[in-house]
Image (cartoon, rainbow, N blue to C red; front, side, top):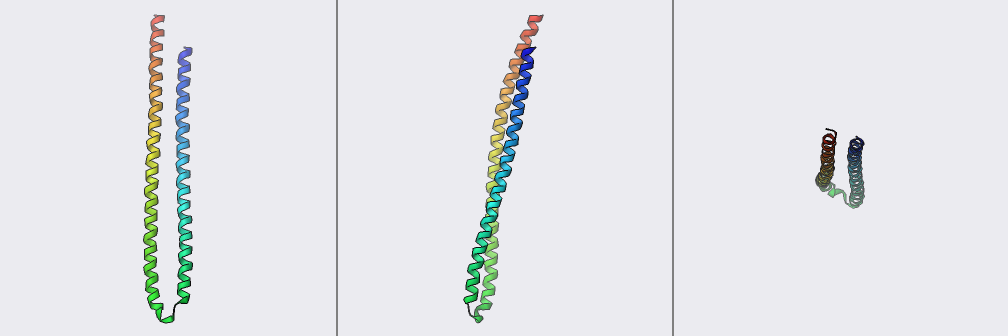
Length: 137
């Protein structure tokens, strides 16, 4: 009976280990996603500030008759910038999806390993219980 109680305690310990690993993995994923998103926002903001300042320098140096062409160029640059933003965000999203899939794969491997150990422990417990029952009989 002591062995059975000890084995059940071991099973609880393994279950707690799996739960802790899952919590840590989820926290790590959330932190990674937030850091990646924050870095992307900072990069985009710095890029936008640089583009705006460069653009303003060009605008102030141009002559009045070129302003109509400038308006068209501004719209075109804005469309290109939006395309770049979308591309950066799509790239970031793809990277995050890959990271998530990788973390999920690692989590599944760890869960399978723990389940294997628990199955081995269960088989050992069943054998000991059978042996104990045979001795009692």
